[in-house]
Length: 122
Image (cartoon, rainbow, N blue to C red; front, side, top):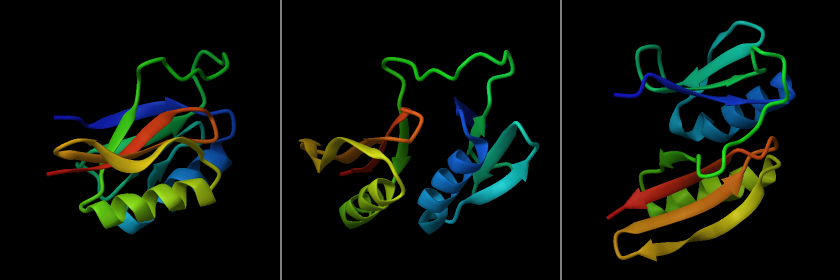
């Protein structure tokens, strides 16, 4: 259903290194790099995350209420990927924990302030 999601950055090299490094344990890498936009994912034709410098040349801005959510596969993987995000320069938005009986998640913001979560359902 989702082809890709795009988030803005002030520093393409830093954003590519952060997101590709963070998502590498899930089998992701930079699949296509066109200079001002790069696509990160497991393979073409599957959902991807794109990082870009905004086309209108204005500063990138993270939206209030917008968030990227990545299934981790297990609670242990949530813990691991959340810690990896912080090691790569993310800031904490809520450490891993059970938010409701069937949802376990760890929340963070990337170096540009975009909010994301690694989660496990069930």
